[in-house]
Amino acid sequence: MAEKKLGNRLKNIIADLSSADEKKVFTALKQVRKHGKKEAIIPLIDLLCTTKNEDIKNDISAILFDLKDQSAVDEIIAALDNQKYDDEKATLVSIFWQSSLDSSEHITSIVRQAIKGNYIVGIEVLSVIDNYDATFQETEIEDLKFDLDEAIETEVTEKRDLLISIRAAMDELNLEF
Image 1 (cartoon, rainbow, N blue to C red):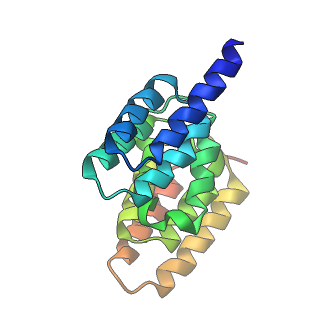
Image 2 (image 1 turned 90 degrees about the vertical axis):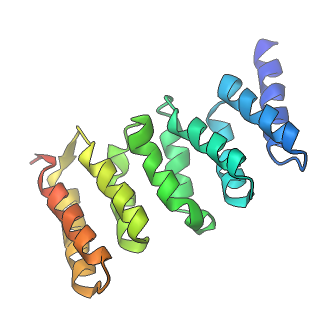
C-alpha cells in the first residue's frame, strides 16, 4: 500500500512540474527534493529546458547538483545523448562533478559531449575528467584520445586549446592494461 501511495505521489509531483501555475511548480520542486526518485530526472530536465523563470531553473539545478542516487546517472546520460536537451548540455555534464555521481562508466559519452558541444560544455567535461578517481580500460581511453586528436586537428576556435587540455587530462587517468 505504501509503495502505491508513493507511486501516486510521484506521478502527481511530476504532473505538477508541467503546470502553468508557478506556485504549483515550486511546490512540486520542494516535493521532488523530499520524495523524488530517478523517474523525476527527465521531467526536471524537460522543465529546465522549457521554463523562462530563472528561479525555477536555479531550483532545478540545485536539485540536480545535490543528487546522491547513483542510479540517476543513466537518466542523465540518456538526456545528454538526446539532442532535445542541447541547450542544457553544460548543466547536465556539470551534474557529475557537482554531485559527485560517478560517471566513469560513461566516459565515452562525456568526452563526446566536449567534441560535439560548445566551449562551455568542454569546460564542464574537463572538470568531470579532472575529478575522476576510477580506473579505465586502456583501449577505451586510447580510442577517445584518437577522437580528440581528430577534433583538435579540425577545430579552429578557442575550443581547440580546451580540447588539448582535455586530451592532456586523459593522459593522467588511471588505466587498466
